[in-house]
Each structure stands twice: as C-alpha cells, then as structure tokens.
Image (cartoon, rainbow, N blue to C red; front, side, top):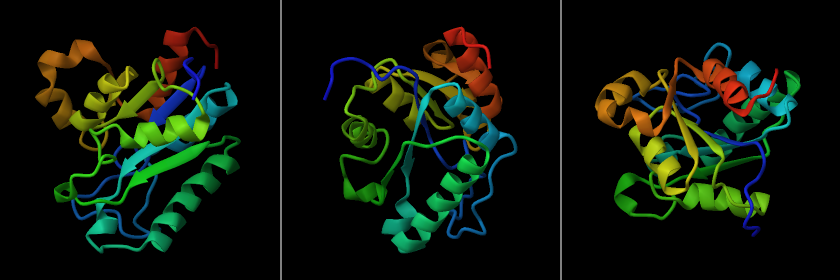
Length: 190
C-alpha cells in the first residue's frame, strides 16, 4: 500500500446518502430507491476524475433480512445507474455483521475503509468521506478523511446530535450539494 493519498478519492455511505434509508432496512432491489440527484452527483464526480468508493454497513444481511445475492443485485443496480449516467464506482465495501458481532469492519470501525485502501492500493488519508450518521463522521476522523455530513437519511438528526462538533466536518443538504462542495473546495470547475 502506498503512503500517498489517492488524488480525488471520494468515499460514500450508501443508505441515506445515495438511496433512501428505512428503519425496516432496504431488503430488495425494489426498495432500493436513489435519492434525487445522487446518481448524477456520483457520475459528475467520476467524470471530473474522482475515484468513487462506497462503504456501507449492511447488518440486514447478518440478520437474515436479505441474501448476499439480493445485496449484489442492489449494488449492481447502483453500478448500472451510475454507468448509464456516465460515471463509475471503483469499489463497494460492505459489512454484513450485526452490531453485536464486534467485527472490525462495522462503522465506525475502520475495516471498510481499510478494505478500500487495499483494493485501491493507496491511503484514504485526505479523501472526502460523505455520510449521514455520526459513525460516518467518526470513521472519517479516524482515517483522516475530510468529512461531509449530508442532511438526507439520518443526517438532520445527526447534525443536531453533533452540533458542537460541526466544525470538524462540512454539512450539505444532499449528495448533489456535497459534490458541488467538493468541487468548490478542490477548485474544480464541473
């Protein structure tokens, strides 16, 4: 693994950032519904030269709510939509474990980003990390990523919960606004 950061790496949480979230879990391709503008935002980032990775806790798998085959179909749908919009997702890392399993990959543990670093053969330090939960912002901090909290999914509640820590990360209304913020912060015209 290289010591240098991947230029332009953007790591995204899935549920609540790319697609609508549900307290009952997203259990099928039919329930996997993109948040308006999210697919286009991923494609725009990709077209601008950013490497896109997804890091997602999927405890519904460990709970038996859906199979690995179903999860793969959801991810294939995501990949297809981004590709149809002219973009690319380099890798998707997921944790299948329940919270009580004490694994090394369930966010806010660093295992998913560690997997992404291995897959991309580079460090995630300095990368952008977009999420909607406190565990996403904690993981971003642990891996020295630049965090953006989106207000979609659990984001509004998280923003209130982390109000005093808000200076540690940026806040955007949704993934499309986060992409615009990334372009602005990095001085890229998109």
